[in-house]
Every structure is written in C-alpha cells, then in structure tokens.
Image (cartoon, one colour):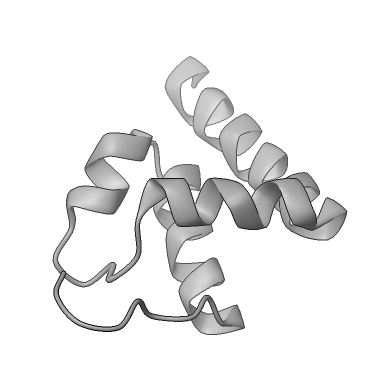
Length: 69
C-alpha cells in the first residue's frame, strides 16, 4: 500500500469484521488486496474504541462457532 494511509470507516470496519467472522485469520484478512488497511492500524483503532473491540470479539466468536459446527 503506497501513499497516504486509508482512514478506517464503518464500511471498511464491517468488511474486516465480516471476514473475521467467516473464519479468516488476521493475516488472511489484511493480505486481501481489497482491504487497503493494515493490522497495526486496525489494532490501534481496537484499542481506542470499546465498541469496535466488542464487535471484533463477537466476530471472532462467530468464527469459533463456525468451526465447531
């Protein structure tokens, strides 16, 4: 990713969380070309936002549930 870093908006958040809920690993999510954002930037946003952290945790739980079924 070259140039100015992309800002995290609600649509990108949802895209990332949906991929996590679908069972993709963090590495797989942020390696996707359509996800023009980095794990380190997303991690910083997680730390700043309780709401995003809660939604991230829920997405991870959904991924676990998907593996169990």
